[in-house]
Length: 220
Image (cartoon, rainbow, N blue to C red; front, side, top):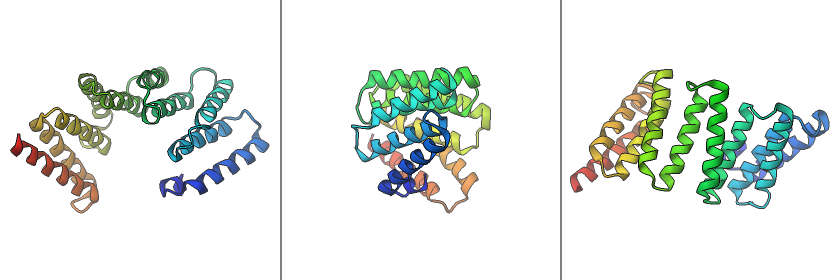
């Protein structure tokens, strides 16, 4: 939501609770709109560090979604994805995060096939998990899978492709493979310039990242 984007979490929490109250009265306890509000409330409380209620809201939302949609639906895949984020970023539980990220990916694939943005996003989430736990070979393989999907969908010059190039830049820098990192950072810059022109903060950020790589190359 906008309030969440602005960092106004207490107001966002209040309005989400109000949304749940109103929608429950109008739509009933087990409507997917109510479930999605509980899912959003769990994510918001996670960001606020209120972890006591997060799992309760996530599990309640997931149960409601399954009762309404059955076992397979994009919103259920999204709920698995949120659970993966929570176990990775808050609880630091690799195995549980891996389980939910894989559930999300498999469900998206069963719904959409291989060529879909949600599939690419789920692969990215798995890659970020392996990166966080320093399994760089697996990370590289997954980023390349996501890149293949995105370039087939959007072509080479798309901001979503640039996101993956950025991830590859970071990964290769972490591995000390600075020439590879530089190659991908140049691709990022080209895409940002094509999309946003020369005067955009992302273009400035791309230049900054390239400068850091050149410094690393000089020091290497």
